[in-house]
Length: 258
Image 1 (cartoon, rainbow, N blue to C red):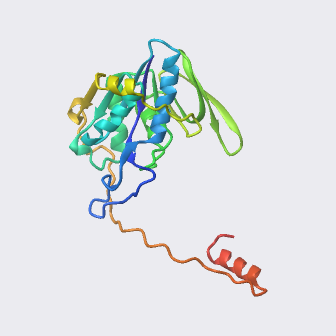
Image 2 (image 1 turned 30 degrees about the vertical axis):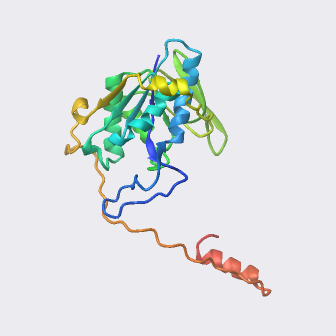
C-alpha cells in the first residue's frame, strides 16, 4: 500500500505571528518555522500502520518554499520512506484553489492508495484542503476523523459531531483527514535522522506538474485591503451598587450577546 501524507511548514504556534502589510502574506521569518503538529499526527497514523504491515510505502508531500527542505526532512527522520517537495516562485501567495490544484497534480504523479491530511493547518486554517483534493482526484473522502482503522480494502473511522459520533468508511483509493484527537507523533531518533539524509527526496516545479500558475481559468484570490489588528482596549468594569444585574443585562444586549 502507498500512503501519501501531506505535511506543511508553519510559523511556530507559540511564537509571534505577523502579517506583512506590504504583501498581505504571513511573515514566515517573524518566528521559528516548524512542521505543523496536525501534519505530524497524520504521519504518525501512516507510520503506525506501516509498522505492522510490511511493504507499506509512506511518502510525505509538501508544497513550500525552498527554505522548507530541512523541515520536510523531519518527516523522513520520523520514518517516512521518501519525500516530494513542490517548490516554485510562482506559488508565493497561492490561494486554496491553486494549492489544491498543485497538490492534486503531485498526488496523481506520485500515485497513492491513501492520502492522509490534517483537518486544518495552524497558519491558514482553511480546513477545506482535504475535501478539495478528493473532489479533484475523484476519490471518496472521510474527513475530520477522531479515530482511524486502515485495511487493504479500505479505511474506516469515527467523526465526532455535536449530536454524537458517526462511523464512516471508504474504499481505496481515498482521502482522509484527521483531528488532534489522534495520538501525538513519535520523535525522530538519531538513527532516523541519519537515515533521512539518504532517503529519496524529489523536488518538483510547476512545469514538472504541467501547471501554469497564472492560467486564466485557475481560481485566484487577491488582497484588496489590510491593516494591523487594533490594540486591545480595556474591558468594561461593572461595579455593584445594587443594580449590577441591570447593568450586566444592558451590556449584553448592547453587544448582542444576549
